[in-house]
Image (cartoon, rainbow, N blue to C red; front, side, top):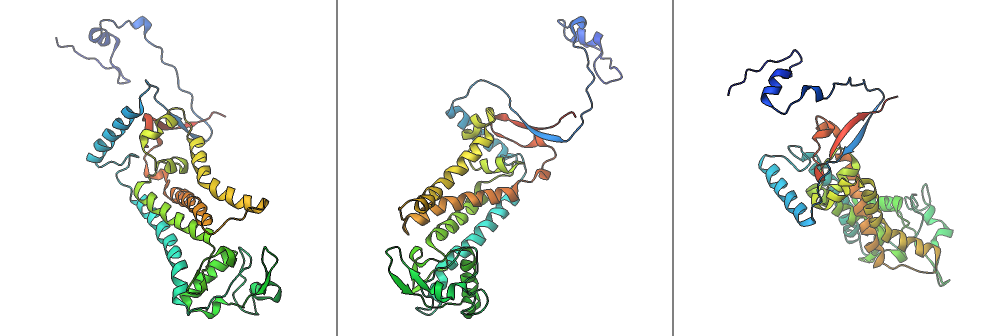
Length: 328
């Protein structure tokens, strides 16, 4: 049966036509239209979650895989954007810079003549070996060259200046001088030359390189730094977190797990008689560096302007962002 539609000025179907299309329609019970108040104040980002029946982890995993296949076929990434060029670029930059220093820490001792770098030991976050007796030579003073070990034994260090090395080696040892304490008992020796940084810093830079590499492969821009960090995990694992909106708790918790090994090893050594070794130091530094790399890459990748609006961000558990304006 053909029904002639009559449209009102607002573009909605009239009451008569609606009744013909839906016999159960009762105009007396139709919801009244309420005026929408004009929002004031600054907009805030709110996570909206569609409540639904509980899904098992297996069903959630299958659904996520089907979603990836469907969006991949249409050329859409799992965050709702057409590509992830920026994420790859940022992750590769973090990986490249960190890998350059990590490799250089091992390479420069072999490029220098055997025995060119003596045992060192000065301050962190300060230049102590720029010259032997001029500016920034705090590590070459008579007091600094006189080294006292934990067993109260004393020996004299030889003076050292990275400005007398070739430009590449000098730059790497300058970087180590500025950022590391250079204590020889906490550093490795290669080719009878002490490495530019301690073993913990070696582990940190290994973690930085690995974190940048992982983010370049699996990281996604999801509007905020927090959600961009969490994007490394499969969406199926995150459904419960997004359904209950515990993103901040998960983000801080995962970051803390990466920092705890370094904190425990370092502060236990500082506050007790425990002495770490050159095997545990890099092992505890690597997770910390990995977390710093993920945080850095996410901070430079999370860019809202790549989306037309907040609701376009594809999130686990069918959650959506909405920009809401709070009334003053």
